Image (cartoon, rainbow, N blue to C red; front, side, top):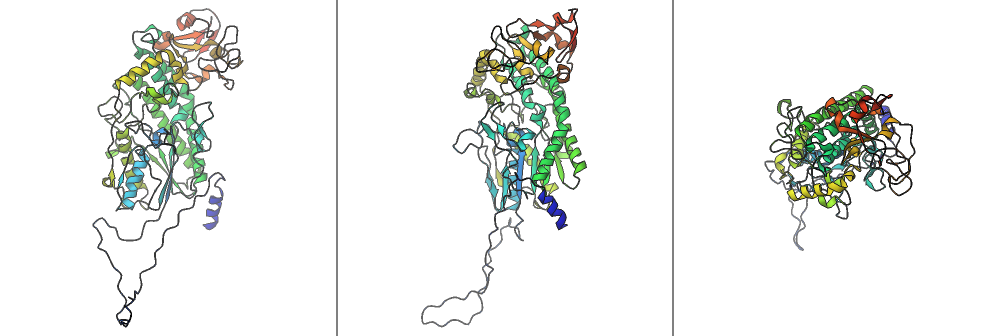
Length: 549
């Protein structure tokens, strides 16, 4: 057994630094106590003084202290606690500035850990707020590495503040963690599937409508449903790849923590399968379209866990599903979905103060669990962990030792209007942190406009820095470039794919709302015009084969 353990421990990578468990304090055992008499008084011949024994309070538990343990938390925004703040305050940077990892002291795992620690330390009490997070309680330590926006690759890679940028938001999550941790929490996968792009597409369709709506339609609602449907088609291959990425991520966690039990978190489904009630910024039909995507992401994570366990059956892996962790297997968020009264989820969040410098971060909190939802999920997680790990948590969670006052974020009408006013002329900036081929970048004042050069001729790539200029090549979609030069719509590192491999057909009712454009200086043409042109067939993203002009 020792030989096997030695082999397992030697598999930990060099990047996983050993973090020693702090020494447990020791006290001398009680023994004979001989009082010293005043000068001239002989020593008494009494026996040893018995040790003083204080009465045990009703909550006092007899027995030795529980063995200390470490927990390491890996994850994205749903794990970090994004949205779990009623006033946009999170655990700040060391200098007091806003940390856009958005780690909340009301994040589900932190709520669960605090409640379980109160069971291990029955005389303790804690107050939880979104802007504070303790790293140790007694001898037990928490390494909370989750960060909003993280992908699975950020277990071992730096996470940048924005795509293509140089500023680092979060160092590699699996660095500087205790190798012998007993719990490793894994809450990743949503961004790998394209959650941020989907949210940005829905938000942009709502916000970027200088003439009241796109494509000349009577309302913005139809435009949002069109763009979200097409974006879901584009993201299809990413969901198909998610299973393998999850399995690889779990292998990395196992290599870093060879003795830990791994807890894999699924995402709470904040929308219903159908019949969703629309809110101010997103239609019920749009939410209906999003539900299968969210459900498939969770299934892909389950499939990735199964794939990992088939190869590593000796590693304990537990799947925490908030959609079945309620009483009798019900969803923890049932009846509190987006659009329902007392919702556990944020709608589209508006922060006008960030628009000029960080437009994407201005709505970063959107569509995540609010304080109410995060606390409810955290309590369910605490009960789940106590059942799965009774040796660590024999007393279970102790919720009454926690003081919490969760509240929803109050919507400010003036903030919403300020964001709408800004988006009239700056709407394209809302998509700055999305994929270069995201539908978000094709939402314009003229409607959903796809570049013909990008989609019809993927071998034609002549990237130059700078905004589109007359006479220059025109490849790509709006939103790229910068710094001067000839002309392009895309950054140099982008390699177009076969559009038929990227997109899948969408509903025929949406065809009329898509346009193809020869270049940024040419007028867009409706797909209806292309359908009747007697030329060679081409593949249009999200539509399929048509006849080019």
